[in-house]
Length: 328
Image (cartoon, rainbow, N blue to C red; front, side, top):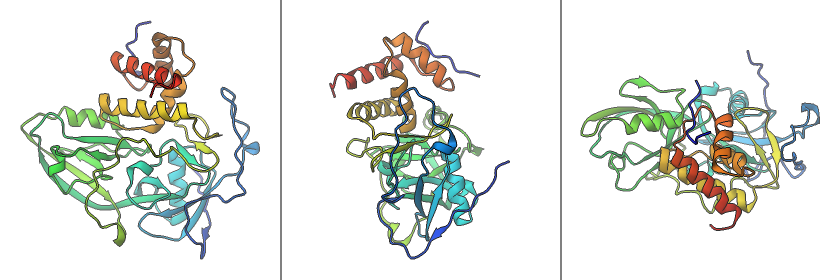
């Protein structure tokens, strides 16, 4: 099979208790949580045999501390947080781990450390901005929250958007030239922005995260490509999957961390996005494949919604091989 990947064509509410008079720390779940590792390739244990994981959460702009549990993916996580604080789930833009600041290196992706503290960033000020596209590249890196909201993860120094000071890291892109893009995946949003004609103006409607007073500071350019920061902290991680139940796993190995970082870099280079969950899935798919064609077929089966270029697939295959051999 050639490498070219083909593009494939009522919920109950459970209230979580707020924690009164509790000191906010950098850990969640307490010391009683024990990690149980689901073996590679084995199905997850039945729900009644899975460990009971409890995480602490706050709204990033300020709130009491709440406890949440019983979620398997990001959408369910947002639902639990919303129930805790009396919100509607669509009000949540994204979450960060162990910091209330808009820190893209601490963005919640596909894994949560078993002792991580979750901060939810909700919708704040709406704004509309007109941008003149003087260059082919705008200098934006796009990601999404796993629940239909694409937002700005990084702004390149000296780029077109860098000169538009009202546009900030963490801003949710709601509309492009009047077209509502809520529910559009990050790679599609990046493609739409790239295809906007050069030397013309376009309009963005943005929603910035609500900020506390101590967060009103000069605009951040966003995260540098992840390197020093681990995917999670604590003694293990809860792996959230877009398909299938969440699983509790060991902390990522050195191979996994290096490979995921490199694949995430390649996603930004080729597609203008960053997505640690997607990168981790690709590393997981490719770790036992014997050649690029076998890897391409496995990617097509696991990630059929994406149409990855052949050159990108080769580079990802090479990155996984380099990580295995310790060549980074």
